[in-house]
Image (cartoon, rainbow, N blue to C red):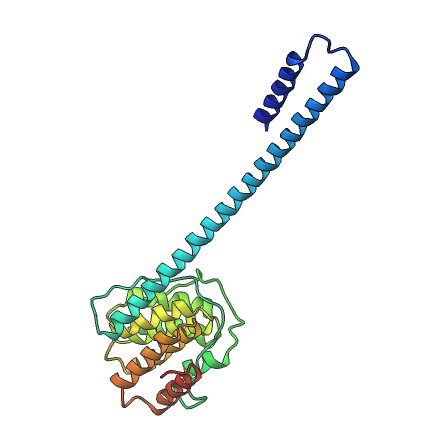
Length: 270
């Protein structure tokens, strides 16, 4: 704007110097006034042009940021799909990222058949509102793996999902080869699902399927992985997971099969 004003002043000065020697007459004054009006109009037009350019630049910056955000989300979705494809293909060497996103709102716990799962902790998750929450950093995991598992489960039974999530995460890291680690990994997925953290739930169940293919809850892990994808509006991936579950686990418990049928009908799997 300073450059424009300077140019305008210079332009006006040039007009004055270009005026004839008889500039003291009324006609010359009117002529100068007319020329100054033209200069002011030109200055006003340039100012509006500069303003429009500035507005366009801001819009371009906003659009660039939005494109970058959408590209990031697309990359994350492709990474998640690669992880699912690897799991369904039985690639035990595939290393999926630890976390795809902060989670997507919606959902809640998955209850297979109320009171029929034979799983008191899972039933507790389905019935609890999760209203009780402590500091997730206030965790003192016991050194004994069985005591540590009971410690983490205690938070679940109390509906303290924040500390239960932290405790089971630490358990999986501290006791990767213990017989109860598969169950801990499964519980971690259930917690994420109960909190509506569906992308994180998908991560957890993918890890369970990949690391513990022979676990007794493998079929249910497939079911809940499919449920997480359905809640993420990934119907195609969810249908693939449900069909794979039925193929790999034809003798899965009846409640699991029934729930899979309901979910497949709900999202119109072909």
